[in-house]
Amino acid sequence: MKSFDYDLGILGGGAAGLTAASGAAQFGAKTLLIEKADKLGGDCLHYGCVPSKTLIRSAGVYALARRFPAFGLPGLDLPPVDLGAVMDRVARVIAQIQAHDSPERFCRLGALVRFGAPSFVDPHSVTLDGEVVTAKSWIIATGSRPAVPPVAGLSNVPFWTNETVFSQRSLPRRLIVLGGGPIGLELAQAFGRLGASVTVVEFMDQILGIEDADIAAILQGRLVEEGITILTATKAVSAAYDGGVFRLSVTPAVGGGDLRTLEAEALLVAAGRKPNIEGLGLEAAGVAYTPRGITTDKRLRTTGGHIYACGDVNGLMPFTHVAGYEAGIALTNAVLHLPRRADYERIGWCTYTDPEVAGIGLSEKAAAGQGLSCRVIEEAFESNDRALAEGEAKGKLKLLVGDKGTVLGVRIIGPRAGELMHEWVVALAAKVKLSTMAGAVHVYPTLSEISKRAAGDYYSDKLFKPATKEILRLLFSLKGRACEAPEDSGP
Image (tube, rainbow, N blue to C red; front, side, top):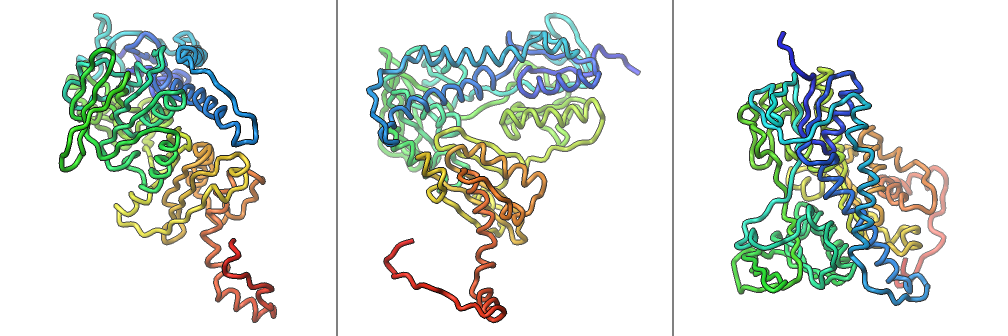
């Protein structure tokens, strides 16, 4: 049997790579983790989840202070925001978390961390700093980076991406955001709340393009209320930069039309991601890939067989929690040799705008696209007592139920939707019946009651239908209504 330097080699020290390295080492596998950057943590820690949510929190607190009169409190005359101070806080949070992702910690677990740019020379070997390193199995977890859309002149101007925005020190008076997806909208709202005049340019006919139109409309309404300009069905044609001012020329996305020029002191490009596969020597390893990412099967195996790919680099479901989940799948197959398969149907997600947008399973749009028959049940936050008390009554919960009472999907747009979604994550994972959720006693007053009410709505039409009333009247001699309300009396 051929001898290798390591049982498992991992390329990439982000969420997926760190999860795999920690688990493999603790199982007793001799593990090597190679990271191209000079620090562990990956995009999520340094340029994604952590800094963006920290920035969003600061912006949210500032926005809440401006809403004091809505809560019966004296209004405040707030000074302008010092963006440098806000970004200093972002850096402190990153540094605090970075301490948990140190090479020393992984060494204590039993995994060796090395920094450099590895490249495969054959299916079991990579070169690193002029040295050839071998491993019995490999996991590729090199992540993704911002994609630059084909806009004339864009590559020649100093635009921002999520990799540079958190190092900015001065708040621009005007900001153009190219892209109306989760990253673009989160940052657009944050900068708008901090005091910038923000314009979002989106090619598709709605923001959050793959999401249901009614969900996107609620979010767009909130953003517009906060002063953000949103241009949907709009194509960016060219970009220029002169005298500290960006000029982005746009036109209608379909059918052409008059050219319009937008001006701003900053331009943020948030128009998608691309996998980090350049320079890895994938051809030498026999690993197939497409522009979307490395090709894998349900066990996260690449065409290299003993080589696995997880996280953003495979292009399947680009979320940090999914990267960790996929790392567990790859680790189980590579080290424990158990044929575990990935299942994405019960994985939730959240976009951290205000209101938050969270989901699991199919959307109404996706269900229709698959030709699935379903019942759509909606509950509005304006009917939730806690949401009214907190002044956060915008939004709703959408529950999609199949013919046999199976939950096909859930969408929530509203306060703390990402937290509320976990009740449904557990319910779907454990295959909890809707009747169980409807019968569970929820604490009052809580936002979570909205889930109980939605589950209960599925049965209410059957339980309280006229035929049921008639049967009960006959069985128990019930007398029926005690009052007839006037038609204009309201609810």
